[in-house]
Image (tube, rainbow, N blue to C red; front, side, top):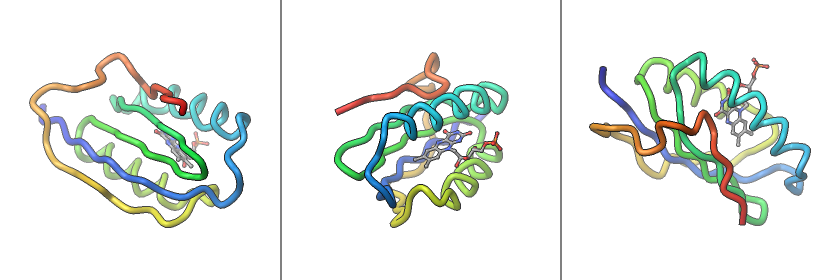
Length: 98
Ligand SMILES: Cc1cc2nc3c(=O)[nH]c(=O)nc-3n(C[C@H](O)[C@H](O)[C@H](O)COP(=O)(O)O)c2cc1C
């Protein structure tokens, strides 16, 4: 099965709180496991940087869902394409803190 990847950055509407990250990660780990998605979420200042990889259909549906999330804005896709093998096969959603 092909593995698609997408990297985007966005800006938090409010200062990023630990509770916000914990909530996003908890949901992501549960949902992404079911949908075969893996990747990481990095936060720095008021910015999010997220990398997602997995089957193209579920991945693009997830990205469309995430893009509508009111907690962030200024969503910008930085890179998108295919990878032969997953880079983060064990991370339903890893957190990389600054
Ligand atoms: C920066 C950011 C990254 C997110 N990443 C994911 C993700 O990887 N997987 C996911 O399911 N939801 C993610 N979300 C949350 C979704 O926007 C949405 O709130 C969630 O999928 C809803 O889950 P539910 O339908 O189970 O309540 C993210 C939200 C933000 C703001």
